[in-house]
Amino acid sequence: MSAILISEFITSQALETLRSNHSVIYEPDLYKDRPALIAALQNIEALIVRNLTQVNEELLAGASKLRVVGRLGVGLENIELPACAKRNIKVIPATGANAESVAEYVVCSAVTLSRGLIPATSSTQKGEWPRPHFSGYHEFLGKTLGIVGFGSIGRVVAKKAHAFGLQCIAYDPMLSGESFALDGFSVPLMSLNQLLAQSDAVTLHLPFLPATKDLFNAATLDQMKEGASLINTARGGIVDEKALAERLRSGRLSGAAIDVFAAEPAKDLSHFVGIENLILTPHIAGVTHESNDRVSQMIADEVNLFLEA
Image 1 (cartoon, one colour):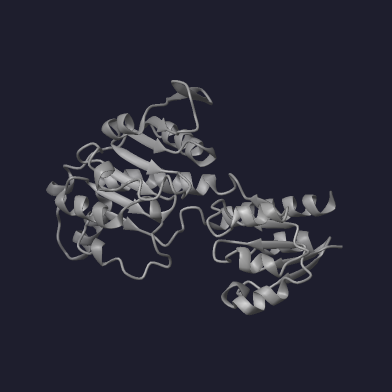
Image 2 (spheres, one colour):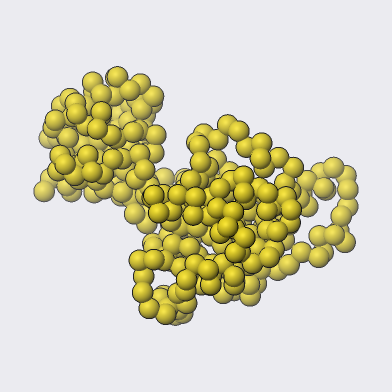
């Protein structure tokens, strides 16, 4: 029986899966108390975290028995992979488990922005009746969705978008060829510049790396099609928020849905104040009741398998 420490929220069913085979310490707020977290790791073989527990050299130095880290999500920015590799610690992300939730958010956001539903709601709540103005907004049917990053989530986005009647194109530096075949259709692959010029909406599904930091800066945003919208459910540091706000305010871009921010929790979003066709959410695109169940159960099962191998 191995010892497992869980320092952030996991679902009850997944917790029971782990407890049926191992000794489990479940303290979902432990990530807030760094000294206590480090002390608790002394005899632990498996650590399960979300994105708030910083798994770095300092933490690992006192975890001599640690063999595996399970990540309840897909981003690995809070885990120092070289430090884990140096100690032969396996890192297991929940790849694909929240893809359906993210894809749903993306397609819904693209349609919401195209129809202007956010400013229409605000105007109607004020007692206005701006029917003629919002009659000039557009259907998204038949429009082009550019998917930047065509991994597991990007491909699910394409499937949902295709079913909704959208044309999908993609850019991914890890893929070669002219197109990528999915179930019953194919998605053209092109350069980032080509994608930006053709897309009515652009959705980001990239990891946060030195190469992607501020990838969507002022110059990149200016390559986007006039009146296009941007959806970011990937990582905040990929987009220059102030440059985006300027282009939304000027009308150069028509709208945006931003679920992730350069600093989280996001405390100062004053640069977005007064922008109408804008969706701002607290990093929830991939977090639903259903995806929490899938993510938690996947990691519980994978950690169990690793410890029992």
